[in-house]
Amino acid sequence: MTYHGAVKVGGAPDVRELAHLVITKIAVGPMNNNAYLLRCRATDEQLLIDAAADAHILLESVGDSLATVVTTHRHQDHWNALADVVRATGARTAAGRIDADGIPVPTDVLLDDGDTVNVGQVQLTVRHLVGHTPGAIVLLYDDPQGHPHLFTGDCLFPGGVGNTWGDPAAFRSLFHDVSTKLFAPLPDETWVYPGHGDDTTLGTERPHLAEWESRGW
Image 1 (cartoon, rainbow, N blue to C red):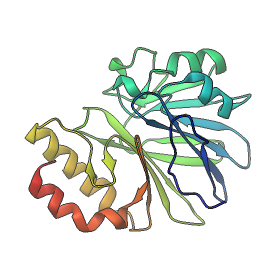
Image 2: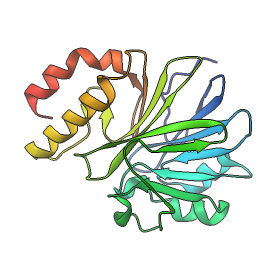
Image 3: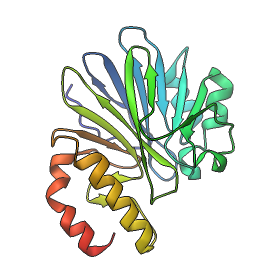
């Protein structure tokens, strides 16, 4: 089956099999959050991005072992199931340094811009984007046998950047960081896995950057 990334709460996960990494996308919770389970094909080590809700559903996909849970930012809908998942698996926790104090489960690994997080033999690069929250992070997997894969939390969606609640300074900050740290260095083929809803690509969104900047959201 071809990966499409369109998942619904209560429905089946969608699975994407890359040369070195398997990505499982799961929709959970009342806010239709996306959680992403990454598994290294060489070692079977697993990493979960955003234990957002419905711990029992996430744990069904996780199975026997989970090494790490990365929380993209401090908003509660992205960590509601974190305590239960960590309790069940013993996984270490990681989050952006500036947002970690807003996450009630202790953070074992504080992440800064340019840091790396490993899942088995696969390396993810951290990018810190300011605006949706002060310490939000996104994770980049630059597939050596394909195109980049970008897990953006609530910083980038189909149709625009994340919510900045009408704060012009926050919008300018987030737009700047998305433009310079994501769109500028990465190719159009980069696949975007957001914190809610369907996936997109940077190429699909790139023509609309000027429109986003002009409208201010």
